[in-house]
Image 1 (cartoon, chains in turn orange, yellow):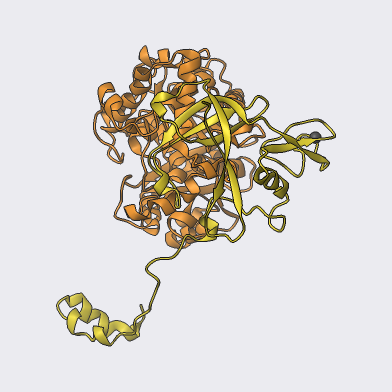
Image 2 (cartoon, protein in one colour):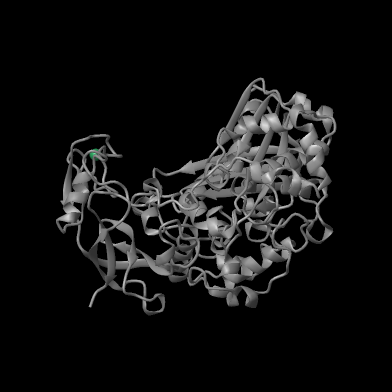
Length: 396
Length: 178
Ligand SMILES: [Zn+2]
């Protein structure tokens, strides 16, 4: 890529079961984002990328990117689009904004991720009619194959093949939810023990309720700029050093490469590491926000992002190597398990967390000591797509 | 809101006058309180040759045989059935029989988050069945999660779908072998 791109600011709404509409969330996140960078105004925005997965199902609204432009007073003069890549829609929006700036098409972009998922309980079945259809609707969705049983089967196979334990899964959930207890915007702000996780409702065994991320309303925004412009508004940007993404001609159950490994994550990570010049991610990465939609996901990701040998993920968390003071501080934000998972907003929030860790603005209890490099990772759907982005605090 | 309504709005903001501002004289817009399950939210696809080019799969299933497509050019076996081979893009495909007995590769339960039309079936066991060359997802009927193990022998059964569609539809499920 020809130009360096930096995150220069970002903002967040409170996440959770919000007494607020889809449009309210957009306005809250937009206000917070622009207030974070006083020297950037809506008039500076040339490209707008909105990550949002199911506004048609949750809010019965479509063509949402122009709605964001209207709500935030942005005259878009170059690029505007919504990105839909299920749970990775936020990172997809970020990736396209990065590409547009790196390619020299624009200098300044707003990335906004938003999802309004909580409807009154009696409407849940209606809202779930699309959530069960990230694989092939005709042959998988028809069987009610939504996320909890899919990740439960990943956990079952990983335990079967690598002797990963129920307690190791719970350690991931307890770690991340405990981080979220010190995060002011998180949906679940309560410390949770391994026993609490194991004793919670057996939603899709072997996974229990606390092994699962929430149903969440929320939004987050980021402003990206070319290096030249970024230097005019801040001296503490987070630089995007690499970005990779892989899908292996597979989305439905029969065609997935594995039920205990995600080779797509390995490939996407290798792309990003190569662009960033990272040879040994375990040594070179300080902080990582990875897609812990379910506790098992984070264990598979330790392995397939290239940090430990295959099958060693459970031991990695058991040995404390993903704690704040471990080899890599994983999910200091609280992860999807603690913050909740408003689908289109998650990747945006993860990148904002890495930026905030770099500039030292998170709650002190979950601040990683002097991080210089970071990573965000999202999987989407049946983990058929993996997206990885690397970030750095300074640029030599 | 436009200027014509200013007087009315002021009155409403006062709060207590709401009941006296002529509510009972308002026109009522009637909306249905309930609708039947719309066809498009019914998870089972239409199965006739007018609606899908894989209707032969459903015809075979209705006749009692689980099948899928194989490419006559490159020999690739597909599932789900296709009309174009993903490997070589040939459209010269043939239907071949799949076995009706297999092994449980993985399984769990669906207890929450069931989509519209499936709420009454929860909880149920959902599995991935290994048929040798194909692994497919399916309901596992007549089974409790606690009683199952990876590798258990299961066999196919065919169910009829009674829903908001006029034509007869079928689908496959599995259950533990005797
Ligand atoms: Zn072929």
